[in-house]
Image (cartoon, rainbow, N blue to C red; front, top):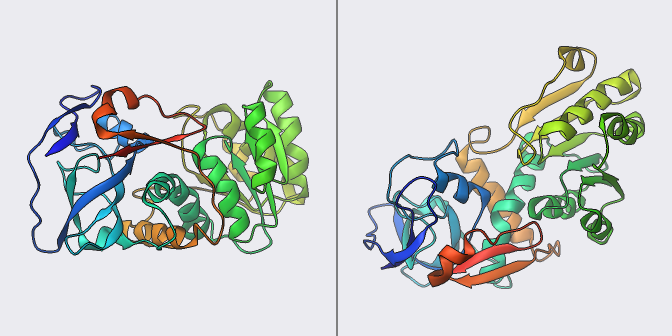
Length: 317
């Protein structure tokens, strides 16, 4: 079959022939129609992601949309290694295949499932968001962050505060539901000055897609708000700005901050799959918006690096 193939760690996938899969008991053989290029997919291909198997060659792609043997249309996640989503066919455990709403098209479903699940699961499974609470999204101008703004509102947040460095991106978030936007351009003192009044007013949940310096300033600002601020559930999702921070121990002693992560490992796989099912069913009723850049599978080498903060690249086998 035709597939994208990663032959060595760090190499760009190439278009070529790969052994066709055969389903075993409890699996579906999927004819793939759409698969998005995600940060996790790139991370696994580079060998740097913590869930990488380290075995090569393999077909990249952790999720996608396709048709089962009986013609039913499904979203699927985590195909059996070495088969991934970016091929004409793949094999997936039946428990990881979800029926799609009739009014949600293949490309949109493939594009929004993974980035949308990141905030849906964080808010529902980790933060346990309650209606009427205030949510701050750190790094809201990227694809996942823009969906997080929409999802937080859909799940009942009364106030959504969005941060980012992209000025144009920040300005566009109001139309998606952001009540307040904060620029991350500035030194540490400027960031703390921007954050502190909002923590003093009350923030219940922080979804952090960046880590790095902005996360440090958020945590320090929350601690400095002190007893006047209510407890905060700080959920770490991504590390676009760096994998490490320098956090003074006093921040956690002097505040009611609950610091947690959200992702593969911190949430049981079956719960992540269930969260994705909820997201896909809500996509049309919630009016979730995502910009998509579709490319044919044969162009995988050129499209591999095309993803940006404005569009999500979706491969069409």
